Amino acid sequence: MRKGLTIGDFSQITHLSVKTLRRYHEAGLLEPDEVDPYTGYRYYSTAQVPAAQVIRRFRDLGMPVREIGAVLATDDPDARSALIARHLARLEERLDQTRAAVTSLHRLLTPAVPPIEVELRAVPATPVAAIRATVGLDEVLDWYGGAMAELERTLRAGRLEPAGPCGGLYDNELFTDERGEAVVFVPVADPPAAGRVHPYTVPAAELAVTVHRGPHDDIDVSYGALGTYVAEHALVVAGPVREYYLVGPRDTGDDASWRTEIGWPVFRTSAG
Image (cartoon, rainbow, N blue to C red; front, side, top):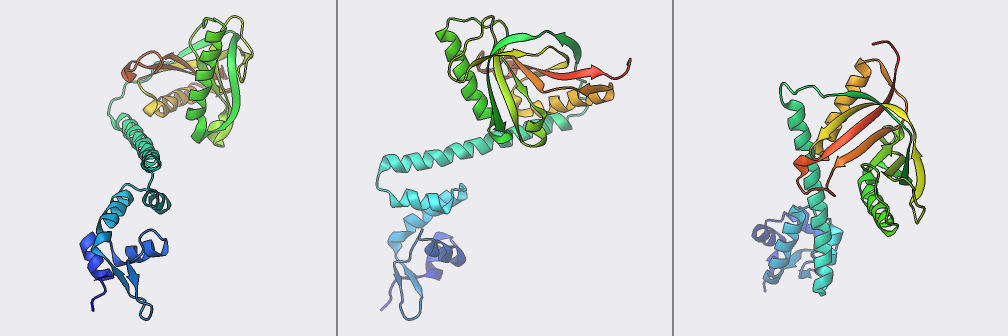
């Protein structure tokens, strides 16, 4: 009497290799309908074909085996949707990273890229409302978003008007060691103290300044060009790099209109 589909037959039907089916069995993700206790042969039923196809699609999307198991194990539609949504969010983040890399490559490989414009500027000490933290390079974007939102809420609550564009200070260690101090700030005449927000003074400095135009996908290219200028003009770095967000996502959804001023603290080592 035929017990069901052999693992070979099931593999041919589902386009999942025998090796993969064995691995899914061992992981508890897709167990055979029956396992012969004497031979150890695995047998599957046709009713398992849809589940196998769902698993294959999730694996094509890079979902971890453990998460696929959780999706298949729950009968709660909300829980299932939350698991899938979480993975889709990860996919969208990877897609954004891929787009950013492509944008940078296009800019790097485009011939006859015009040289950046650099201004040497002395800026005075500036009182600001700030949030400071030691963060990892891979978490700085999420941290910045939360910190900036808290700053805006605090200023609104105190009915305080910004005295200039918001900005950030980023220690060298954040880039060299992938962990360092970051400060996000908003200039204000009388900085408040509430929650993580505290008064801070952005120190006076001489800066080599350039403006990055557009989204931040390729801002590293602008950093590279500014750093090259600093090195070639005998200017020495003397502190954390600064960013001033002249126009950003809080001002317009048109990322082509964004303008970010990058300020590289310097001092001249020669008359040149």
